[in-house]
Length: 310
Image 1: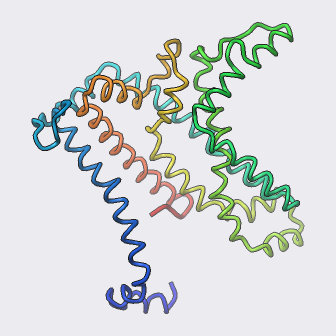
Image 2 (image 1 turned 180 degrees about the vertical axis):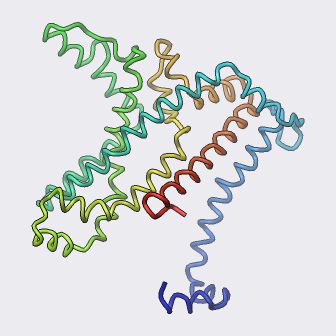
Image 3 (image 1 turned 90 degrees about the vertical axis):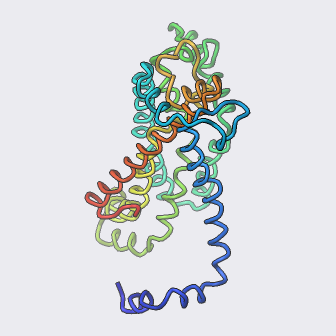
């Protein structure tokens, strides 16, 4: 820490607020946004989880039931299956969707043609802007019993396979479509990290005789480590948050045993049966577990990589 920075930090808060007074309104807008749309709903959700909310009742006049909803959730015999399915899908996503953006970034960043590099970036971003409805339509067109893959297999003399109704194929289809949709968009943060790398470092590595792989190991990856740590910490915090919209579109009665997750259960119980307190209780429990996972991942990142998110 430099001497100027220490001197600045010792200055009174009023001096710093006056210096950056033109930026304060923008900061206050951001704080107000998160307070209104994030923190107030958390408080209301916690209160609803402790009350017996019915249609037509309000948070203030609904009767208190204490921890009854939490006991109901923890004693539900379906919860073990829901937790197992949620972790299976989330861990598969974490393992198979975390590294493709990193590899894709390195490949595109090393392209020599600037025009082709920009074209490649634009091309891999496009799937992100498709809704899951469109993605499901594409997957169905390829993997349904009358889809392109089964038609190709039939013409080659093989037997068709019911991918869309197979319990074994459900998770691979989810993860594969997730990779195709989001891998390109996930490269944005990594490209932002690499834009700050001094090109002279690559030139110096070339002069020292470093090949492409050696330059990636010595220059590219160290520049990406902070973003990789941040992405991993956020991914750990979202490990219980399955992509509800995707699963809701992909699952059916044939794959229900492996497709039913916590989010779909909350949708059926909380909204379908109008048990709002139960749904809020599950959301609160997920939030606590996610916070703990973020703290653990952040601590591990500090010890292993020497840096964390906070």
